[in-house]
Image 1 (tube, protein in one colour):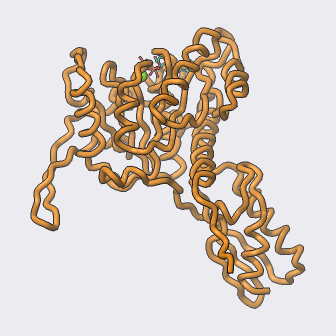
Image 2: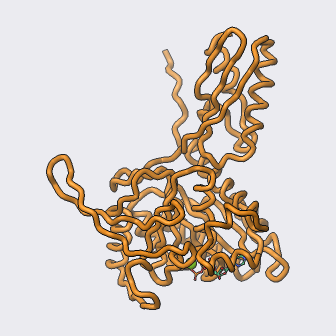
Length: 353
Ligand SMILES: Nc1ncnc2c1ncn2[C@@H]1O[C@H](COP(=O)(O)OP(=O)(O)OP(=O)(O)O)[C@@H](O)[C@H]1O
Ligand SMILES: [Mg+2]
């Protein structure tokens, strides 16, 4: 049995979580065949990949069915898949994800920060950008303080450029207008100023190499989303809503806003699921709209308390009732991105002789 035989056999297996073949997902990385073992390294397209063992089991089953007497060993590695469309403005970020809603106070910032720390928890390199210039709450939720400094770099051609340095908090690069204005200072933004600020936050900031950049959007209005969409190709938007009927109408508004500015919607998260607000409304709505449901986050005092204490990062790290929900939501978002990147990529063309 040669490496090519093995690649052909494994490449056509279908990954049940995404319904895509292993070769389209690029899962089979290296294959080492020795006298008594076959070692396969599975390269996952995101570290937030649920149920990876299923892949190992399927590989073993497939190879033992080829009646090999060698032992099969499977290892796992990962390399985040992305469109890397930020390149046109000089960003080295694989996936930019916006988190938005049609309505204020539904938990966008909480969801955005939890998603960022969730992806980081799985091992990815992540940044968090607070684009809510009207009511920045990321500094408060993450307990991060400081004034971003401007660094000067010299390019190879001798030209000097200046870059804003994000604040680092719990191993996460964070940028927010909240770091640049006094607390409780209201800021009135005119369209061009807003555009300039966001451009600076993206284009003139030293984000470095990131797997994911999460952007917390202000509620409702589309101007921030429009600017983002003009600057770079986003991996997509996560729409947050609460289970009530009124809130669901707002979610529909948000979805139509993202459609207008040409940002693909990755799916819907239901936040504050529980006794008071009900449950499952968003799931039903997602199904009705043909959008992926990205998970529910229960209404939990611990979420509010840790956010108020500036310890939102601990929600995904330490045991608490919200943790499994937040990690599941993180996996769902990561997997939707993988699916989109793979489905949008051109199929390998067959050479016709
Ligand atoms: N699942 C939850 N359980 C309990 N409290 C929550 C939950 N989600 C969010 N909260 C709390 O609700 C309040 C609003 O959350 P958050 O700031 O994340 O909403 P938002 O949509 O970003 O608001 P805004 O529109 O003002 O930006 C916060 O006090 C937060 O701690
Ligand atoms: Mg917010």
